[in-house]
Length: 278
Image (cartoon, rainbow, N blue to C red):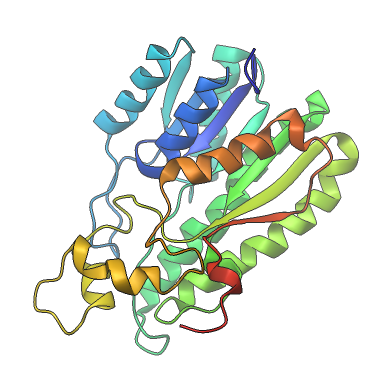
């Protein structure tokens, strides 16, 4: 018997990367999956986003594990699209037991150089989009008097990293959102927690602009060129965590093993948020 056997998980940003990893880890432990993604471009990012074919592949991978899956395209900036995605999931499965608010973007720049468009898109997707996701799923969970919500936050929600003022502002905002909603819904059987990973080995991180940010001394740096710099960010000597490391934390918080845990921040960051020197 799996740790979330028979439960249904609603996951945003599920087309690839962390979102796909969360879907597959939960499916491995018995959950059916409502896989949600925007499947489109975002103006201020300079890395490719997940597409419809990626989302369908996530669903097929879930089904290959013997679990059911439905997909829905939704922009987390648009409440009506999220509400429709929830409706699709409820029509297919009749309930939502787990919600993983995973969708997010990143861009880079010193605080005084970030454009208004960069700021607005990061706040709209990474902060307001999580609120709208929770707004969409909470009524069902309250009616069930049961549910586990996991917000994918970041080490940037615990610290103030350079060149990420807009991202850190959104992620710090999520801490307050998580705590407040936990206070509101946990008396009714719904738990809310957040996971705070360090850099995760996904397309959101592994691209040229981050490589150049970490190694401005090189003309065309690549993945291997940032290993040493990235490792210095952690107390455990690794350059980044794997998606499954985050998914294992999601699984724990979604499962009954965490039945009395709510309002918590779980760091999966190789000690990065507690490191005092670099």
